[in-house]
Length: 446
Image 1: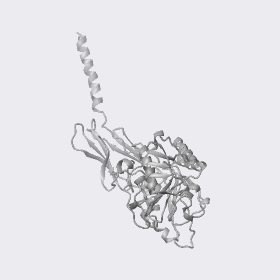
Image 2: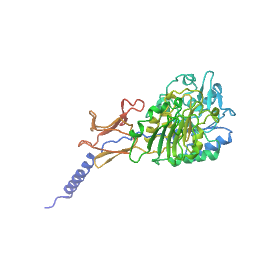
Image 3: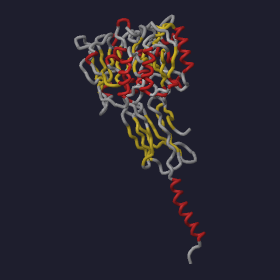
Image 4: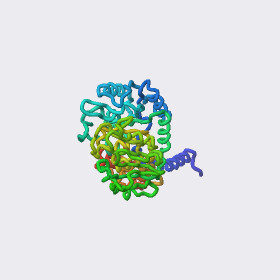
């Protein structure tokens, strides 16, 4: 005798329930979004000298090229006609800028060429540093050692949110055509992962080559397949050539010279950075007869750095190549990499395209075939990362796997999920963004 319709429907319901329950139980654990590798266009303010035709044109060109939100374009009255602005006038200027900045802006681009420094009663600051920190005599003062930057060699991609520091960069182009060429180089650099050469050039000028002690170990330490090649040149003997010449793949160039020569024989790759250690390279436009930082831009580099008053040759006041290159290769924008490489930037001026990112990428994690798969190149060198898991319903977090990071390179890390993964939670641990010597939860449940 066949089962009645009610019994048949009940059996069918049980079969359907049996099919659904395993699917629910097999639901993967909650997976957090990994921290980003850099700031983006929405984080950048573009500062415009209202009524200055060049500044207005450069700002518009940059906004359109990079997709900067209209609310981030800040027009203010800027005193013109001098390489310096008095501290009292700068206070008025900065107050006007701050009043208009959206709260989420993390960095800014200056689109005028002058003024490039803020002149106080006792000392002068680069205008990019004064915009970042505010005018502060503890950050300048000739040969005195100055207050250090809390932003130095950190991993934060939100310096304003985390540190109340808003790094700035001055585009540094003397004409709209030059600005458009610089912007084009910055755009061409995006995610290009160039394989050019980085030059670390010690010259016979001992006073200006004090940074050289950071350089000899870098070529071997950073010898990565498919990555840039670093070359340390010891030209401390004056009989040796003092300038790089006739190279068509320059990616980095750091040198100790008051006036590097033969720049016209070099071809810089998109996204390249270059600078020299001298006294007034950041005082635009003429650097008091020395080579201005903008000369590197005119030669084809995408960013550079110089100081605006006599800083003496404290290495902390100039970019540290090992720090800059690491952050660059991990996917930072050039404004982040350059700023993070200077421990005492108060007397400095940063110039170039702030959003240039030769190694641009988006760190990502996904669950694939029963494992967490991480794809990133943003890991800090010589540190440790970990995935931790918490079962459904709570309980202690336990380590699933750890990874010792080497030099910045593309990494694919597969972490098998445990048998009790269904309904659990995951979190990502690594060096704290503001204190790399400590470990923090970088991404996880709220």
